[in-house]
Length: 281
Ligand code: PAF
Image 1 (tube, helix red, strand yellow):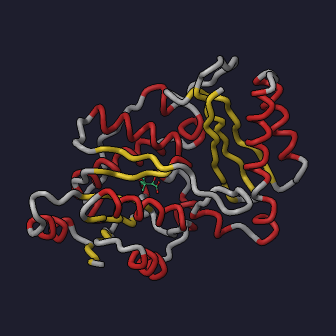
Image 2 (cartoon, protein in one colour; image 1 turned 135 degrees about the vertical axis):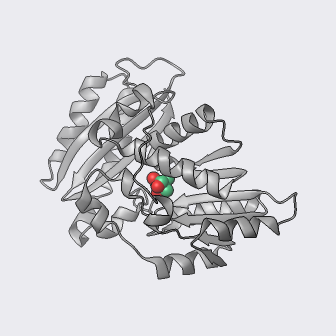
């Protein structure tokens, strides 16, 4: 696996690829887990070369402590990427990605006003900026993202449409541990006791799906979700919404055949976990 830190190195690499080569791209913030490796494996199947980026993007963190504590495990990450045949690891510095303070702001309209966008001011502006920069540098034919960050996937779809990025997006279903916990870089910050509790989040989502499909009102399902998780003092539900999958606006009544997303963010101790469940009503 080649390791580049500079855009010029990427450019040089592209020059020697055959014109028919296709580039698969997996952008990450590191602290890789099996979910990321699944994206790389898929990229390997679909493209000639696979480029993975690791960049802990400061502009998408609204909480400086969260940025400081974000796990950084470059050694282990590189080994994992090697093991699944990643061709290039792009590892830029903050000063390379942001040589001067960014002045541009992106506006994703209603999509950024709900859920994560509502609780993390400026988050999607930062995601949009860095993903645009990475798309310009890597010029992928196919870019792979995990559905765990459902709202991020919709934001990037909008970015690709609005800015006419010439690439295909592949959204890959959430990878889960055997006990149901969605794989996430943040999971490694859970204490042993918190890790044991964490699968209750997925359980609560599954229960909410069953309740909705049994005809319970959305508001009741929301109350039940929170009551269930709050039986453990360590959980604090930040939001739990029943939304449509097109624009993630809240749905008060599900209609037959509608694609529904149950979307949530909870604190488990001081660790913020997000998860979602998508199904057809
Ligand atoms: O999902 C992530 O890891 C990040 O938000 C991304 C897409 C790499 C942008 O920094």
